[in-house]
Length: 110
Image (cartoon, rainbow, N blue to C red; front, side, top):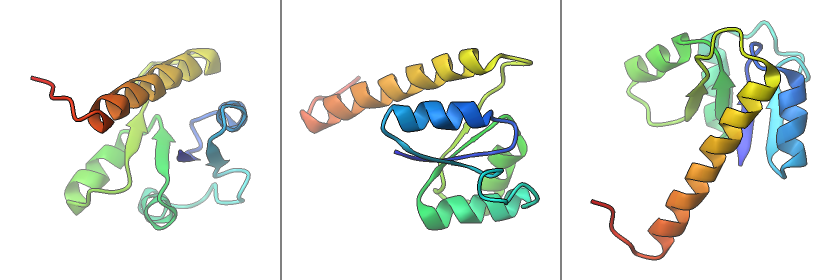
């Protein structure tokens, strides 16, 4: 999967994602720390990346735009450590894998 981490996400989490085999970039690594939220959304849309953020504005901007992409994962965990965020992200990725397996087997969930 392809991820774009916002400034509120640790660059170490991006390295962790890479170690898991994902294509992940951080705004800071790209020299893009001053992009507006709208510009970040557009970059993620153009590159087909999932935004990782702690900023609620992304959900609002996406809803107002009525666009379906990019996907956004918003972490609302207070002052959670990087490890807590990585654990939650690992859980989300596992759920995605489970649902993908179900969908590819032509199963129905009711």
